[in-house]
Image (cartoon, rainbow, N blue to C red; front, top):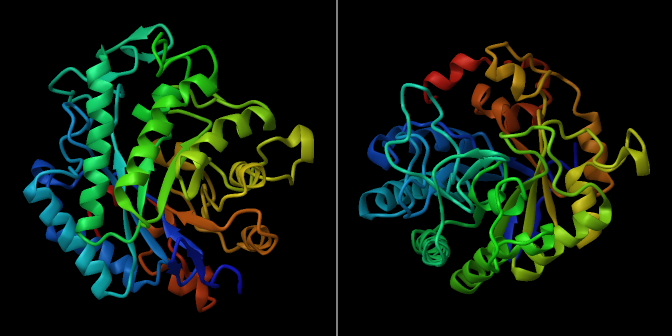
Amino acid sequence: MSTLFSPFTIRGLTLPNRIVMAPMTRNFSDDGVPTAEMAEYYRKRAEGEVGLILSEGTVIDRPEARNDPGIPYFHGEAALAGWKNVVDTVHDAGGLFAPQIWHTGLVRGQFPDKPRPGTPEGPSGLYMPGEPYGQAMTRNDVIDTIDAYVDACRAAVEIGCDAIELHGAHGYLIDQFFWDGTNQRDDEWGGATLVDRNRFATDVVSAVRKAIGDTPLFLRISQWSQQDYTRRLATTPDELAAWTQPLVDAGADMLHCSQRRFWEPEFPEIDGDKGLNFAGWVKKLTGVPTISVGSVSLSQDFFGAFAGQETDATSDLGDLEERLDREEFDLIAVGRALIANPDWVKRVREGEIGKLDGYKTDMLGELV
């Protein structure tokens, strides 16, 4: 598995291998403050030889930016001190660390018994097409939110993070600006086309880029959203290029292209059932490095996991290796398999993939 374990450099940051820990919400931050147990959780993955650890989503300083009380803040003295401890702990274990900076926008609370206490904000006060929820952001709200992204990312640099990822996927705030089903604004952050609705994301990326200097900046995007798993923002390569190229031009060094199964082709009608995946097409169209993700070394995607089904580990990474060999994408993010196996990378490198544990939903009930 030479390519999977070869180094990769972006904007002066060299990763020892091509494996990234995918951001995964864990909800263990009391009062929004990362704990010593969280630092230990990330340390284990660093010692397990993950090339770059992406944190769970951590929110900016806006009212109702999070949709669960266990989600960590990335603002305030206590939370930033907690994150600095995480960063230092990962570094001491020989790892690299990047926070995923987040605003959940108009996404309902994760659990019925923990509803959102205040009124959440979004582009147009729509959770999904035809379903009002929360409130529409004013012009000042939008401007202040961009500033809050900048403040969080500047703080990340100050506490020693190696890179930064902005969460622009899965139906959360930035994604809600992309989608015409949730963005019906008539100002500069709205519009009839995806290119028009790109403005909020490019404004955030551009402002953050100016604030963080040479720190690598990633942006996570997805075609699907949790409001509509069948949604596709870009239905053709031309539409995909028109959406993603401005994000790169604004200052994103890498796009993290989220899909449920990394092996599925994005446009099979063009290049067949074994064609380029989402990350592959984005790299082809923009020329920037990409991260792929989706059910790596697991027998099924997260739908079954959310339904409480056990997910077996699989021992075949041949397709992944082939795609990396031909440079379809540059890095691969591993999620649930790293919850089940903190030493996933080390086991794969040592040829012990057949000994990997499967993933069970009840693993989310503890931080190990």
